[in-house]
Each structure stands twice: as C-alpha cells, then as structure tokens.
Amino acid sequence: LRRTEPGWGLERSADASVRCMDFQRLPQTPEHIGPGKYLGHEDYAWEPSLAPFGSRRPRFSWGREPPAALGKEHRDRAHRALEQEKQAQFEEGTLRALESWLDKHRLNLADVVVFSLKVQNLDVTRLCENGALALAFEEKVTDSVASLAADGIDSKDVAVTLSPGSTIGWTAIVRCRVKPPKGVRADAIAEHVMSEAFTEAVSFDLARVEGIAEVYTGSWPIRVGIFGCPKLEPEKFGCHTLMPGPDAPEKCKECSSYHFWLCCFCGVAQYEKPCASGCDSGKFGWICISSKCKDLTTVDNALVTCGCWRRAQYHISNLAK
Image 1 (cartoon, rainbow, N blue to C red):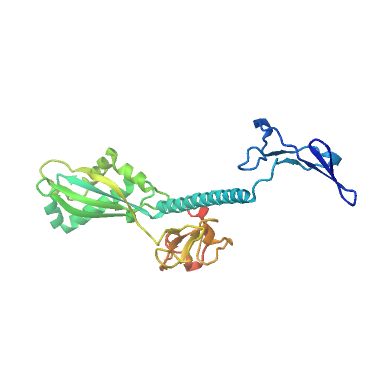
Image 2 (cartoon, rainbow, N blue to C red):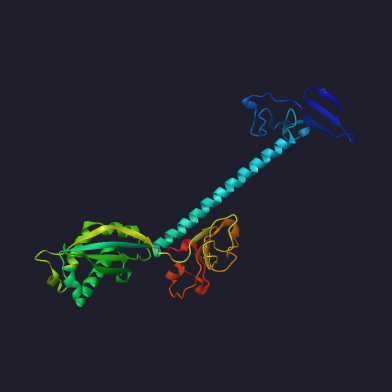
C-alpha cells in the first residue's frame, strides 16, 4: 500500500486490480454541501465525480466515519416520519369516504325537516269538533306544503298534526314533518319555508277549503306564519359507525356485529367479507351501514338500510344515482 498523491490512495492487490478512494475532506461551505449530506452531520457531504479508470461511482468525502448508533437513530426517525405521513393520508381518505357516504344519505332519507305553522283568526275548538272539516283542513295543509316546499315532494312525504295553540288568540298550531325524497336537500326546504311567499301561498290555499268560513273569527281572513324556525332532525337508518384503520376491528364497535358495510379504501358497499375488491378492511377501515336485515323491496331503501336481500354491491360513486 502506498499513497502517491495528496487526497488519493492507490491500493494494489495480489491480482493487480486497482481501487480508488477519495480521502480528501471537502471544504465546509454551503455550496459544497450537496443533497446527499448525511443527516446530523452537516460537515459531511458527497458529490458525484468522474473517478479515475472510467468509474461512474460517486466519490464520498466523509472525513471520518459517522457513529453507527447515530445512523440507526436517524433511520428510525425517518421511518417514523414516513409512517406518520401514511397514517395521515389514510385518515384523510377515510374521512372523505365517510363524508361522501353520509352526504349521499342526506340526499336520500337521512334528514327530516320539522317546522310549525301558526294559523291565526281561526276558531280551533269549533274546527276540531267538526271532524270532516278538520280532516279536510289537514289534507289541504299537506297538499299545500308538498307542492310549495320544493319540487319533487309528494303528499306522502309530508305529515301534519293539528293542535290548539291559543284559544284566546284564535290560533291553531300545525306541526309539519317533511321527509325529503332522493335528490332534494333538506336545508333547501328549510330555507324555502321561511320565505314570505310560502306562507302567503299556504294562506291562500287554506282559505279555499270548503266550509272553512264557518270557523272564522269575525271577518278577518286566515293568516299563516312560521312558528319558530325549521329544524333538521336526523332520521337514522342502520348503524353508520366508522371503524378506522390501521387496526379496524372485525365487528362493529357500536352494534358488535356487521351486516351491510362500506370499504373505506375502494368505496364498495357490500355484504360479504372479505372485500369484493380484495382490500384489507382492517388496514384501511370500514363503515358499518346496517347491523340488522329488514324485509325491504325497493332499491332506494335497501341502499340506506341493507343490501343483503340480493347480495348486492354498490360502488360509492353510484349511491347518489
């Protein structure tokens, strides 16, 4: 072994092969510290160069060998950072899948709009005593709310309950419960029933009920207004509980079972396990849709409650169709 020139060592073995190594320490300035610097050792760097004898290997300039324990610590730190990034991406994707799923349920049957109408200048006692007139009154309120609340609402989606409000003030309270059909947003209905045009139209319709003039108080016409503010009440179907990964349980932590469920990775709502797409539901998480089977005959209801009646599979992008 012999060193011929500063910075270069020539080692000649028995088979006459030559290996070249750079022992020269690089100047420690920012422009000399390249992207390959060793973590925790800013005074070490490497840069590629054209080594002698046609070699294209990068030449290293450590100056001294870094401690082995310190290198393991940095590798572990980098590994933990990578795992944390993967976990954050998983949680973000799971939340997006859950929000998408719940949003599609709100478009179907999840939210119910509840509000009360106050009908003034009406003798409530005489109205309730006349059964036929009270029934006609409730039917007219149902038809009027269904036609005016939003497009696509049918009378079967509206339920009304008549109750005395104030006999002194000649006011009746009609509690209305509207279940939005598929494709109709509940918040849009709540916003529309608060408008003045809605109450004026309902007043006009109620004034046309046959025999309603018999229960008027004096010569004042019926006046309809909103009592309080509309509320959105969730109507829960099934379980709808998220089991997040990477260690999601086999059974739902809420109902201790699973029946119809949604994979958070591929977005397929399904009955059978394992996942139809081959996903690891324990790693990526899943959503319990329903823990009980109901005797359902319509596809829309089955999408919300259970799909096992025909072992159906639904992709998350098809649930809003």
